[in-house]
Length: 194
Image (cartoon, one colour):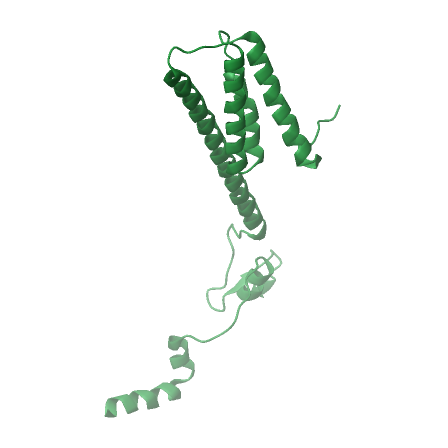
């Protein structure tokens, strides 16, 4: 049997189902009475909303959950000697719902960022070619010997063929002075005159 893929289901259907689940928990909470506490099961719907939605929808789910819990608590006949105790219990449960909602939302965001970084890294590693090993190179002309038969290739051609590097040629000042000394002697003479 295949798993149901929730990504293909309509979000309204999914969220409605989770809200019905929350109501179902509230009904069970009411039926069992205030002496048997079911409030931890409200975390299931809050966790689902936190994983699938943004933080505002998750906070709304927390508000709905606390309202359902409070109604179940009141309708089950739980009377408090002081109204402040009931308010305190409701606020503490609401705070715990929010903590779970925010923690799961942050966890989801962190996992998504990590997955994106991991994907970017895999894509980058696919593009990187690593040259490694011993490479016989002529100490004079800098050609590279490719095989034992003695085939030699320019270092630029070898590196371009085995990596994503393209070369552009120029001439460094030291080599330019050796190859074109006349260009530099005039310049040196002009500088000495100044």
